[in-house]
Length: 249
Length: 249
DNA sequence: TAAATTCCTGCATAAAAACGCAGAAACCGG
DNA sequence: CCGGTTTCTGCGTTTTTATGCAGGAATTTA
Image 1 (cartoon, protein in one colour):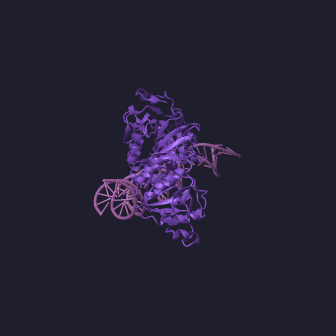
Image 2 (cartoon, rainbow over the protein chains, first blue to last red; image 1 turned 30 degrees about the vertical axis):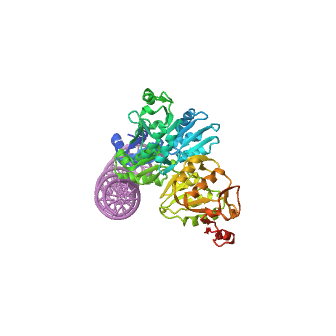
Image 3 (cartoon, each protein chain N blue to C red; image 1 turned 90 degrees about the vertical axis):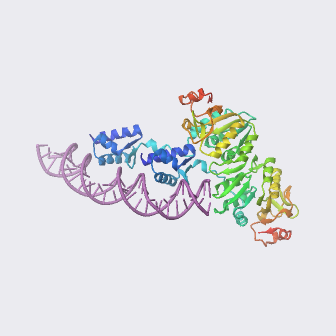
C-alpha cells in the first residue's frame, strides 16, 4: 500500500470516528507502528489531524469546546432565554433560581418589561439590578459559595411567603424516571420551595441535559408545567415529556 | 481512552453541570483517581476549569466581579481599611454597610481570618464571597438600585434580629453638630438598625468627609465608638471628636 | 478532636515515541 | 538496463509519557 493511500485512509478514519489509535491502524493496514507514527506526524504538520500520545484526533474535536466569552453553549441558551421571556408579562411576580441559563435570560429581558423578580442567586440579581424597570427582591440568608445563591431555612421561609406567578428553574438534569434532579442538597431544598410558591413552573434545560440525572431529586415530572430547550417543540427527544403532560416549548 | 479524549469529556461535564467530582469521574471513565486529578490539574493550568478539593468547577460561573477600578481616593481608603481590619478577631460577627471604603476593607481582609460577615450591600457581599474563610450572611429585601443595597422593613427586621460584635459604617458625612448624616432615607434607616444591633460602632470616613454634613441624620456622635480616617489619630482635625469621647484611630 | 477523604510525592511499570541505522524499493538520467 | 541517489520502511535501542500504587501530609467532616 502506498504512502499516500495510507494517509488518505488514516484521514478518512479520523474524520469518521474523531479518533484513531496508532495500534489499530497498524493492524488495519499491516505496517509497523513506526510507519503509522511517521504518517500521523506528517498529517499533523499539515494540520490535518491532532497527534496525541497513542493516536490522533480530528481537529473539530479539540477546538470547538472553548468559546471566547466563557459561557458554555451560549447560543443554545440565548434561544432558550427568548422562549422563556415570552412567558413573562408586565406586572408579574417572577421567581428564578441560579445557573447560567437563567443568567442568559436575565441579560435578554426587554428593557420595557416591568415586573418583579425574586431570587437568591447573586449573579442573577446582578443582572436584574442593571435592568431599568424591574423591581428586584433579594432572598436573604447564608450564601453558598459554590452555587452563589442564598441557602438555608430563612431563605426557604421567605420563598414560602411569596406567591409568584411563574418560576424559572435552571435545570441540571431531567429525565422521565427521576424528574428533575440536582447534586447540591441545599439548592434542591430551595428549588423545591420555589416550585411550591409558584402558579407555574418552567424548567430551562439545554438538550444535552435532557435524559440525564443527578443524585438528588427536586421534583417528579408531574410538578413541571413547561419545559424549554433550544430544540423545536416537536423534536423526538422531547416527545415523551409532552406525552407526560408537560407543555414543551 | 486517550488522554485528550478524557480531558475533553471532563471539560464537557464541567461546562454542563458547573461542577464535577473526581470520584464520579473516575467511575465514569474507569481510571484511577490519580489520573483524574492529573487531568484536572492540567486543565486548571490551562485555565479551563477551576480545581477545588474533591473535583473542579466551571470557570464561567465563578468570576462575578464588580468593577474595582475607578475607586475614588483608593490609597486613603486602603489605609483606612488596614486600621479597620485590626479591629476584627476570629469568630466575630461583623455587620457592614455598603460604600467604596467598606469595599476596600472587604478586599483587604487577611485570608486566614475566620469570621461571619452580615451585609445587604451587593458589592460588599461579592467581595466577601471570594474570601476563603468567611461565612457570609446576606440580608434580603428589595434592592435599591442606586445604592446597590437591600432596603425595606424586612431588611431592617432581619438586622434587628442579629446581635453583632462590631459594625462598620461607610460614612458619607460626619460633623460635630449633626453626627453622622446621609442623603438616602432608606439607607439611613438601615444604618440606624445596624448600629442598634451592634456592640461596637465603627465609622470609616476619608478626611474629606469629616466636618461635612448631609440632610438626614443617622445618629448623634455619642453613638459612635470608633472613628477611622486615613489621618494619624493625633491630627488636629480629629481632636474635637476624640474630646467628644470617640476613640480615633 | 477524631475519622475519613482527598492530595501530593516519589517510584515502578508499561506503553508509546524518537532516533539511528540498514535493507528495500522507487526514481532517474544516461 | 544500470549505477547512483533518494525515499520509504522496519527493527533494535533509548527516551519520554502515561498511569497506577503506596505512604504520608493536608483538608474536610462529623
